[in-house]
Structure formats: C-alpha cells, structure tokens
Length: 148
Image 1 (cartoon, rainbow, N blue to C red):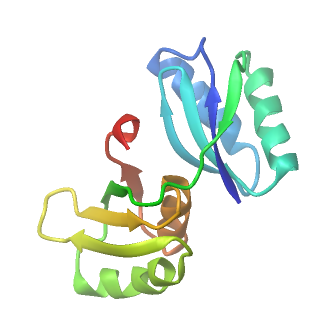
Image 2: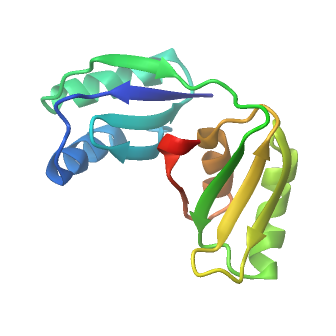
Image 3: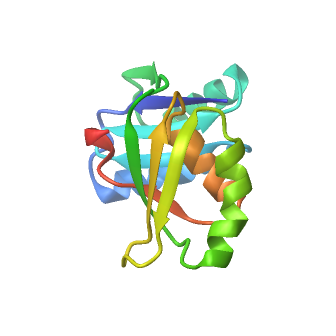
C-alpha cells in the first residue's frame, strides 16, 4: 500500500470535489484520505489501482497535474477526528494500531468533542493510519493535513 497526493488544479469548488470523490470511489480497494481544493490524498494497493484512479479522475473531466508519493513521516505526531468514543471502541481499534508498522505510540481523547486520536509516527503515513482505523470500523478525518 502507498499513499499518494494527486494534484488536480481544476478541482476547486465543493461540487468539483464531490465529483472527484465519486470518481475515485469507483475503484475497488482504494481509500480516500482527503479531498480539498486542488488535491486528493488517496491510498492505493498497487500501480494498477493508481492508474485506475487517475483514469477515473480524468474520465470525470479533470486534469492531473502531478502525483506525489507520500513518504513515511518518522518523528511526527498526527491528529485525527474520530468516532472512537468509549473504552470498548478503544479496545476494538487497539489491535490495528498496535500492530501497524511505524506507530510509535497513540492515544484517543474520548472526552473531547471530536474524539481526537493522536499518533506519533515512527515511519507510518497518515493514510496508513486512516486505513487501519477504518478497517476497525471507525470513521477518521485528519486535522489540518497541510500542517502535518
């Protein structure tokens, strides 16, 4: 698995972002990590999935200006909004986060309104964290991805 950032300069409005989101969702096994003006963050399993995502975005009428592979971020702490809201939920996500390669340590503030998950990276990317949490059955959204 790898996380990529796709530069889509003509995807600016929320309508454009919704169209690109829908286009990317047509590719099986792909995780959308973020969509914002001009950029989509996506986790793909292999080159074929990456090519399929690019083709679906272009078929929807958008131009791909570039693709950047998100590299591991050792030593960074990533923050996410989640719906992990109790000790039972924490127990359910624990195996996924504890076994994820590149997680130094993590914590969920179940008392906060946004149920903030903090993950200190020892080489894992935000997309890989999001994928692990989603596979455990929870929703997750990175907080201020442009700052991490």
